[in-house]
Image (cartoon, rainbow, N blue to C red; front, top):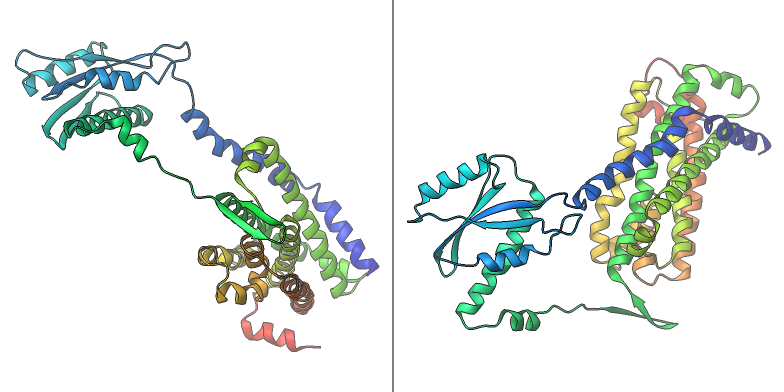
Length: 413
């Protein structure tokens, strides 16, 4: 056991100083957050200058109402973002309107113009003409304003008050109250679902991101022939246990740093939108699930003899890790289903399924204890399984073994 701890300590301290590990731990998440926040920042960027937009109306007159509706948008200095300019010709001929609109656009008198024609009570032609690409933000605002005004016009035609209709059709929000031994508890469904899904996704993504680190660490040592030196001072089981716990600690450290960065970058927003009913047990399942998968990754990764083979193995392992995500939508629909219960006792899905179920429904302490015991025994089982493969594969070079060879390794004493 002492040697296994020494191996774990060596794995942790050596690899935590690795430049690629430092980059993936600190720089990469900041880069991802930057990419994720950039569109939102650009979308919410204040309008710089006022735009003059032409509008031509045929068989309808809602120019004033549309202009009022667009007044909610302001530039940085508080001026209206859009000013509407009415376009008209003597006979309102469409060709003459197009000619006039094009002329005004070329002269930079307007950015573009809206063509609005009433064909019938419930049919309209609405088009926006411009010489350059129109910003999607502008188009969305025009659509919103015109839809609002035309809806009100339709209501007025049938003698209905738009404000009264708005008041009468106001939606309600159904609040879920959870009854427990403590009494009534507020249950914010969306936050709990989102929090649970986020937690599971984070476990899966962390495993996929760490898979490369876990598999490459073994392949590098095999290719550099460091393994022979390590095995001269400890047994394969000690080396295996040390690598599993050392690299698991390394991966969990990386996850902890990512969580700190995420909370620092958007703490109030993140905490406001996610909620877990049972954070303590969720964290235990997370850590045990991570260690279980890590032991499998290292054992299976030891059969690779080069970087190319490790990439193929990593792609297969990633598909295995994503299995709970594919099943999550079914469990979210009915957390008390037999499928959810059965998958809770299947080691590959225990961590994710139990995280879902304990946060969505009442799960007895007995069931929690049994599934945790299954997960712990599975970790020792995977260490034994991986150790068997590790013992032979770690000193094998040249070609990747087939299934029958791996089975023979497991049968060997």
